Length: 603
Image (cartoon, rainbow, N blue to C red; front, side):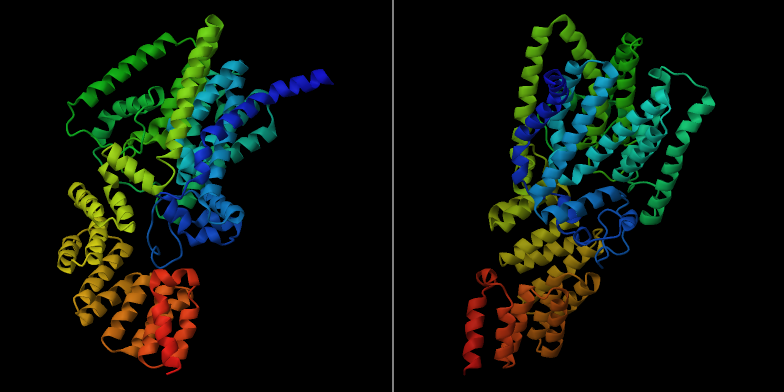
């Protein structure tokens, strides 16, 4: 019995070791917040807060809800399994970001355990596989995929794809029908997590060419691919129905440029894996001309890769790892263009690097055999560096939006996020600093309307209405979504209201409400403008409509109470004010209004 227990402990201790290290390194993520895309996809997404029939998730588009703000628009992103996972998270954690982050870490842990098992299966060495898996598990590049909740799709697509390939291999070698069904199911889950899951199909072909010990006829091989192809066709059909497109949002680019600089992007991605320093949320574009150092570096990479592959031409597992990595990284090369703002992103490396881990395992296996002591020392040093770096990134860059924007702009001169930093400073009432970074954002991205809209809001708050009006006029002709255009009309209304032109304010606020009828602040402002021009009936109607949408909306309750006081209905005003939670009274200045209503009621 004791021998059995020892065998079982030897089998399971690697998984326990991976778990302990991951929790230690990612501990700061348990106190993290929603950041960036987490806000529209999770925090401000009403769809994840309601129970839906499971089939309905197949007809949901990422970032699109049934609200009037998003109705009729398309993001082009179709990842229904991710929406299901968010809904499950909400049932368990409520709207608490640390809970969602804990789920991400759990998925990463499961993916690492699966990867350890898969690498062990391929290289037949548990120790080398464990070292290689730990390098993947603790690698600082993967913090973006793990700690940023909205990057969960990369983890799930990677994990399901590995499992699909493993079950395909087991089925091919042993003819297990259940394994084939499981493999097809895992493939479906992978592509429903992220479209990159489709790239596992070429890996089946690579397995047949490089690793399969059983050579059957071409007909059998083609039949083995058929269920996956049918699933892919069904996936594209659903995607077309839901998003009106077979692909993700497309930004037209120069195809020749994307091909010429693809080797450079390969080199950049490999640099992030092999030399992980200076890591952050990259915003990288194409060079200005073809005869740049980036093109030369890309050509150098292709030459080195060719030499490397020739050197290891007899090592089938090594070739499988190298080919798999490059196949899986292909979507990140932008030869098939997307709407991504950067050509390089750490989260895109998660899935491809899992297969590069096989090569790491082979190198470690050979090194442990020849120089075990030195190899162990080097690996320990690398893991300590990876773990410490990942811990720091989780504690700073990925913990909160405030920290994220400060790191990106102040430490990395990444002015793409200057507007975000300015918004945070504005929220903290650091007007001078916010003013500086809004101007920087406008200088570097003069065609982004959002920077003008937010800067105008700061100018309004700091009593510079004419400057705000000039700022909004610059944004008038820029491309905007209905939501942004509604914000533009609302800001114009606020400016004219502050300048005493209430009739114009009403006109602009009405346009804002027409474009974004669910935006409560637009309705509240319109109600206040109607009251200012003396149309109390319309003012009351608009404010009551806002309260039908959200009966607890404090600004509307406050404005309605003030209107009721003006027309002498003090008791009704008191009822309105009492609906506002006591903790919000100071923020909205309710106490003074309440006393005025109380005096009028007893007057």
